[in-house]
Amino acid sequence: MPGEHFVVPPHWEWYILAYFFFAGLAGGAFVIGTMLRLWGNPADKAASRLAFIISFPLLLLCPILLTLDLGQPLRFWHMLVDVKTGTPAFKAYSPISLGSWGLTIFGLFSFVMFLAAVDEGGYLRWRGLAGAGRILTSAVGKAFMLIGAIFGFFVAAYTGVLLAVSNQPVWSDTWTLGGLFLASGLSGAAATVLLLSRGRRDAAVSDGKLMEADRYFIILELILIALFLITLGGVVSKVLGGGWIILWLVVLIGTLVPLVAEWRPAMRRQVPPVVMPVLVLVGVLALRAVIIFSAQA
Amino acid sequence: MATPVGFFTDTTLCIGCKACEVACKEWNALPNNPLEFRGSYDNTGQLDHANWRHVRFVEQAGTSQDKPIAWSMMSDVCKHCANASCLEVCPTNAIVRTEFDTVFIQQDVCNGCRDCIAACPYGVIGFNSDSGTAQKCTFCYDRLQNNLKPACATACPTQSIKFGPLDEMRQTAAVRLATLQQQGVSQARIYGNEEYGGLHALFLITDKPEAYNLPSAESAVLPSRNNIPGYLTAGVTAIVAAVAGLIAFRRRGESSSSSPSAGGAGSSPSPSGGGPGSSSSPARGGGQGGG
Image 1 (cartoon, each protein chain N blue to C red):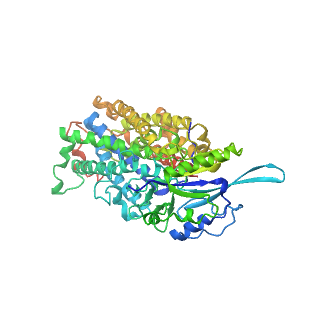
Image 2 (cartoon, each protein chain N blue to C red):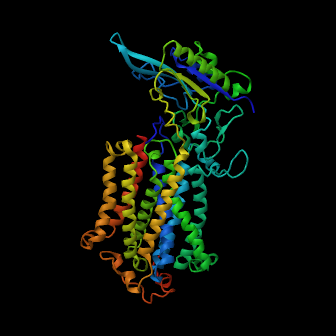
Image 3 (cartoon, rainbow over the protein chains, first blue to last red):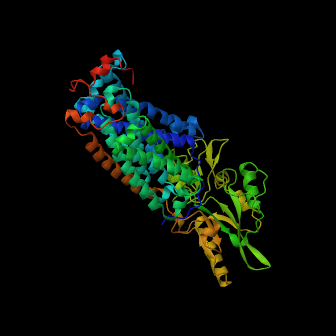
C-alpha cells in the first residue's frame, strides 16, 4: 500500500529526461556490443564495433545534461568529492551518489572500448592508438568488456532506481522502474545500432540478430510496464489520467508496432527500414517522459 | 555535543497571526511573498525556499449552519527528523546533522540537484533559483550557537510554538495532551514522537495527521526502502536480458548471421570470408567512412 506523503516535485524536467534517455542508450549499446562480441559470429564484429562507438559519445552527453540541470553547475564535482573533508563523497544508499560514481567508472570502460573499436575499424589513423583494437580480441580485453557491461547495465538501470528512492508519488510506489528503464534502454540501444547500420554492409550483417534481441527486450519492457501499472495500485490514475494517455499511446506504438513487424516481414517491407527503429526510440523517450512528468504534475 | 533541541507546536493555541512567519523572514532575510489572492487567509501557501514557517489554515466543514467552516491552524516547519529522508539521499553531504541534532543544509556545498526535495515527505524543502540551492528552516542555527531561541518561538504571542531541549518538549507535549483529554478534547494527539525515528518538531493536533498534511506513522517511510527492491528488479532484468542476448546473438552457422532481416540493410550479404579477421578488414580497407 503506497504511503501518503505530502512531497513537492523536484522539477526534474527536460535535461533529466534527455539524460535518462541517453544513459539508457549508452549503457545498452555497450552491453549489446559486448554480447555481440562474446557470443556472436566473427561477422558480428562490425555491429559490435558500431555499438561500442556509439556508446561513448552518447555517454558524454550525460554529465553535460546532469550538470546543466544543477542549480549550481560549477559544483558538479561535489557529487564525487566531499568538499568539507576532501574525501570521496560516496553514499551507497543514495542512487545519485552511486550513479555519479557508476557514470564515471563506466565512462572509463566506454572510452577505452571506443578507442579500441575505432582502431579495429580503421576509422582513425593515429599512431598513439595503434594496437588499441587488440583489446577487443584478447582475453584480458574480453574480461574488461564484461566488467564494463556490468557497469553498462547499471548506468541504464539506476536512473529508474533513482526515481524510486524518493517519497514522490508514483516513483516511490513501485519497485519496477530500474528494470523497466533497463529493458527499454536495451531496446532503444538495439534500435540505435540498427538505425546506424543502415548503409553499412559490414554492420548490417547482424541486423537479423539485433532485431531478434530487440524483440526480446521489447517483450521484457512490456511485461515490466504491466507490472509498473499493477504495482501503482490506486496511484495509477496519476500516470494514466489526463493527457498522459497520449504519451502511453506513443509508448505502445513504439513497442507493439515494431514487435508485430518482427513477426510479419511483409508489413516491415512496406515501410522504409528506418521507421521501426525510430518508432522504438520515440517509444523509449515517451516512456521516460510520461513517468518523469506525470508524477510531478 | 550540545543538548538536542526541539519545537513543540500546540495547534490549539495558534491564532493564525503569522508572527512566526514574519519573525522567521526577518531574521533569516527571506524574500517577501508575491501579492496574490489565494481564496484563503492562508496566503503563504506552502513551505518552500522563502517560507520556513507556514501557518497552515486547515479549513474543515463546521458542525452547524452558523459555523460552516472550522479552522485548525498549525504553524508548520521543518521537522528535523531523527531519520531524515533529505539527509539520506543527499549525494553531496550538503545536508548534515548539527551538534543540536537538527538538520541543516550547507549552502556552500549544495549543488542544487534537488534530490532532497523529491525525498522530503513533508514538502518542506524548496529550490531557490537565485542561489541555485535547496533551502529550508535552519532551526535558527546561528541563534542556537549564540544561546538564543529561534526567531519564530521568540515571536509567538500565544506560546503556541515552544522551544527547548527535546526531552523537555516531549514532556511538555505529554502534559498538555493529558490536560486537553481531561477537558474532553478526545481527538487530541501528539504527532512526532514516533515518525521518522522521532521528530525535533512535535505537534499537538486535533485531527488525523493527514488533515494537517502530515503522513501517518505507517506512511512515514524512508526513500531507502526502495533501494534493494529497485536494484534487485534491475538485476533480474539484466540477467533475463543477458539470456535473451545469448539466444539472439549466439554463434550460429555462418549463413544464419545474415538470414532473417528482410526489408532493410539486413538483407545485405555477409562479408566474404567471415573469418575472425575478415570483419575488421573491409571497413579498414573499404573506405566505409568513420563511425
